[in-house]
Length: 420
Ligand SMILES: *[C@@H]1O[C@H](CO)[C@@H](O)[C@H](O)[C@H]1NC(C)=O
Ligand SMILES: *[C@@H]1O[C@H](CO)[C@@H](O)[C@H](O)[C@H]1NC(C)=O
Ligand SMILES: *[C@@H]1O[C@H](CO)[C@@H](O)[C@H](O)[C@H]1NC(C)=O
Ligand SMILES: *[C@@H]1O[C@H](CO)[C@@H](O)[C@H](O)[C@H]1NC(C)=O
Ligand SMILES: *[C@@H]1O[C@H](CO)[C@@H](O)[C@H](O)[C@H]1NC(C)=O
Image 1 (tube, rainbow, N blue to C red):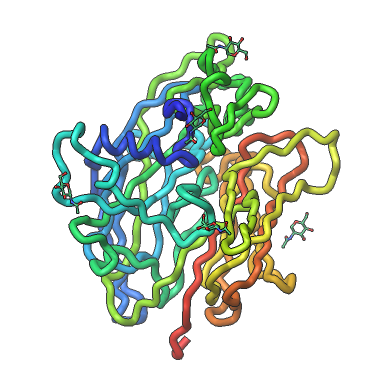
Image 2: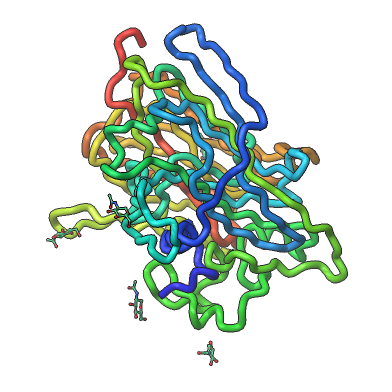
């Protein structure tokens, strides 16, 4: 059994199960409401900014939190965008060199409407996760929206008439209601001995419990050892501490995730897209009759003695169902060169390139990844065929890095309305 305090809930939803059962939380809401009108009168876009519960962090502290039943637009809606950033108690944006947002994920689930109020009587089947359309196995990368340090400079917005459908009563299990949870991992790197290593969850820079390597199992239930696991999500357990510079003192602060959602109420003119997160570590296999995905979610780039060409991590991923590409981007970490998605014939479907900061202010922190570019092909112009084999390549500068990611996000539409 994985010890929940050491494991990452990115890869281990058991932890979320437990968190869910013991802390059903209620969120703060509605700092602002605004309405805007697109040219098309049938698309009244509403925008609300929400904030998660706040939590305390101090220098060097690693914090993982799951907030259940977050504020989300009510009813049957088409979501146009969902963007997020870390803010302090006064609502100011926090720069990444102080508190590093490793990731935030918005995950859909159904909850039993009449489940017991007594947490001891709540059963796992009272929660049913509704993952995105793939293509990872099990509970790996199940979210609909979510990025990391690049959040401020990466838009999730999709063009009309496309939307991510939510709250469709026909798609909710009988006796259940649809809800959303937020899962976050933040690392307060104020005073850290090695800020960059700490953001990469480098195990030897973190004060791990003494028995860490005896009790921690990886996503394949194998014991981690100090020689085979140098860094990554398992070393970034909740409440662990990055080693600090001697004598560093800094105040505890309260932070929360501020998130802004834009949506339209559902109508027949909305065209839903399917959401996929393709992982460049997916070791796709087949057992003869079925494709078996094996996503690792993260990987390590070993020190190679300073080669100049980027390190390439690559996966060939068959798409059971195709569609028209509406949106594409990648969730990557600092050091990324670019990430590219290819079709089976080698054509480039989308390349996402990084933006690095050059200043001091939040969203432009020097040396930090501050955004990834987004592809918006002319709707209808890029088609992925049913059964087509896609290739995802993520490229990083070739030097020792732990816990790096190469996740390609694509939204596909089944058809394009004629007027587009
Ligand atoms: C919801 O939970 C209650 C209490 O445990 C149970 O009686 C009911 O059957 C559950 N509903 C569904 C749809 O499973
Ligand atoms: C943990 O592993 C170390 C070696 O890696 C070993 O010396 C120690 O006895 C183990 N502790 C327990 C409680 O198994
Ligand atoms: C993981 O491995 C241990 C033995 O090392 C076993 O007891 C346990 O059942 C396994 N868990 C899973 C989920 O396979
Ligand atoms: C392949 O895997 C699927 C899903 O695990 C299983 O249902 C099926 O029986 C397997 N087929 C073979 C030939 O092993
Ligand atoms: C991505 O990076 C590779 C390696 O540096 C480069 O050859 C390629 O041109 C880049 N692609 C784009 C679209 O920038």
